[in-house]
Amino acid sequence: MHTEATGDTLRVSGITELTAGSARDVKDEIRSRLENHVIHIDFDASALSFLDSSGLGTLISLQKLAAERQGHFRLLAPTPPAMQVLELTRLHRVFEIVP
Image 1: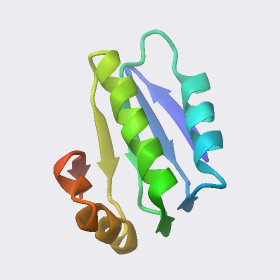
Image 2: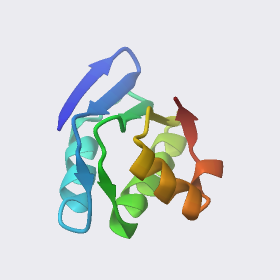
Image 3: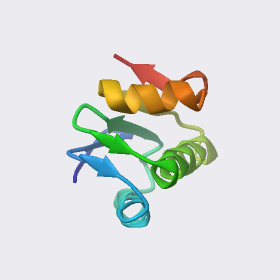
């Protein structure tokens, strides 16, 4: 996982799986990287090959975290398998998704 803060946005990338085994670690790592001035989270999902219910919970948690800071959470370029899970769970209607 790679994180980079630019201005008021934290960009997260390089995550290939977001599952029960990794979800808590990912969420904790992102929380630890959030500085006071960072309010937006961009989650690059272009390498995300597998996503389970715990991973979805992590994405929802990150969206809530950004909203608490009056910011936004965006999913960038989700892979077809990740997009399929988002559509099956109807979360594609909840998240801002940038192709």
